[in-house]
Image (cartoon, rainbow, N blue to C red; front, top):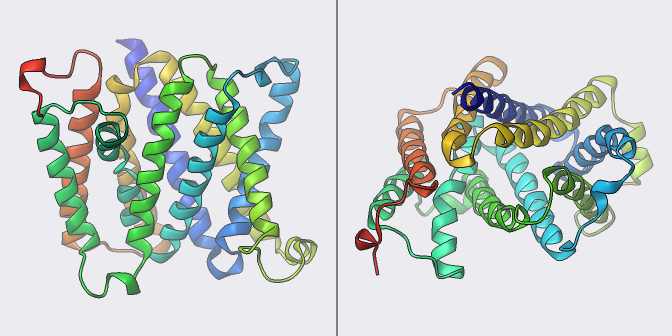
Length: 303
């Protein structure tokens, strides 16, 4: 019981760090684009864990599945970029709750891509979550003129692919190895973006030299939060199984509401809160039903 509570507490702290980094990205606004923000955040997080890696003699760099690390890191990097961009365009609550659609997409992707059977009761939970999604996004003719919600939803989908890759990595790779490759490949990928078609205007040196002290502090805090998020996530799941404590990831919606209200004077509409409640309910039930022993017997599965 103590391990379960400790795991839950660490997971709540992890998602507090994740919510904080989205707030830092939102706070920088037009002062720094999402590409350089993503790049600096990943590079700083990597620099922060390098002493740990070197202290362990680099033995955590050994891997037999580099392509799986590449898939996980690329989807995670893209999801991070879309999440940060969404947080700049919509309320923090919207961005965070749409990112938290990941538990809803995981069984759907498992069914579509891997041919996994989905229990009927789980389809009901997914229906609740997707109904909340429709309420938050409010799809209509003007949807394309306000892409923030769509970007948040896309981030949730990409993170679901990332999570499926992590489940495969868990079979052979240590958590620290996964963390190192995620930050290493993420730093390399965002560096390529800085030099490619998404690069910011002007030389990188000019961009870095033009940052004010407050901007440097903000992006340093974001890198620290990314490193903390990864570390706390690893530690949380050493104390308890994801299915037992995964529902606590929805604490990020509460944090997003508080930070958005205090820092950005955001006041989500009643429709957003209703949709948030449905997404959270559907996501929590989905997590509970997918844990070992939580899935109904085979006789209740759908076609």
